[in-house]
Image 1 (cartoon, rainbow, N blue to C red):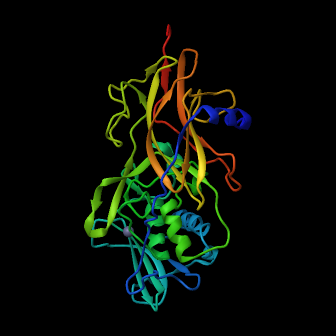
Image 2 (cartoon, helix red, strand yellow; image 1 turned 45 degrees about the vertical axis):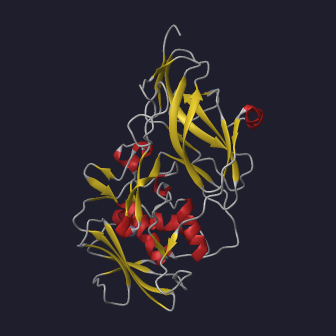
Image 3 (cartoon, rainbow, N blue to C red; image 1 turned 60 degrees about the vertical axis):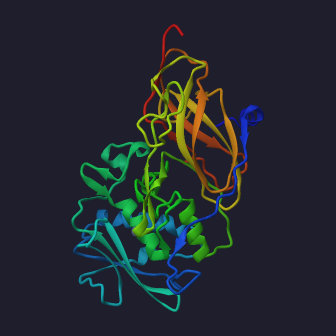
Length: 371
Ligand SMILES: [Zn+2]
């Protein structure tokens, strides 16, 4: 638990940035319908009993659908999704199955519409792919360093979330951090089944299609971002990648996606030295939120009372999301090994549960003897 009063005092001495409001760039399925196409009643999906025989195989789909259900004013009655023995793209059912996809992607959402409504969607997961149905910790992996593959298998959760967002009416985005990108989708610091969930741009798109009266206040910190230099023009989609590893060194490295965030990288430090870091902060809600960013130095990979906090802090208003380079000064620490954890705080969040507000860095630093 943070000490709120201490944080408030720290804000006064911190750096302050004013963010310019980004334009929301989510893309809707707008063919003949400028405001997008959407369902006017809850779509009910049916699993192929051949492709998804085991509850373990269906659970990731239910899990990510539930995360989409939390955003906007629709409810998909997920518990009512059933099973079917025969699956076809030409029948009247919305179906999920494994099959051959005639391109290089892992999943495909085939949609049909009428009168600016979505009337049918089938989702196909490539049968050329071995799928991992768990989450990173299930395979002994850390979510903050994990990409889209484990042991040669593709995590099905990121693909399922992407395809279900297509089903809801979203198209690819080519200039925003979003699940509607290709590449490494971000795992959030949430309970295992919740770790794959819509990002701010996806949420804006869902709310545009399915407005809801309530708001949302939630921040999240991620270790990935989209690479504006990697765009697949034909599919109007950009790629996401893992951000560099936080290290000490002689200055910030220019490539956000290079191995190390510092030039002449080192994992040995003295108090007063600087560590160079990149991370992404996402505002899941609609209102601008003032956040304070700090680097925690901990004996484990969880921020605890008693952990020391960087001498440098950053305060900033955040409207949607940003990915940034930060330099943090190492506080007074006894010699030893410390995990670094980026944590953002804000004093005014009603729904915020702080669970996803921090993310460990890839490797610990060692505070040297005789500094
Ligand atoms: Zn897609």
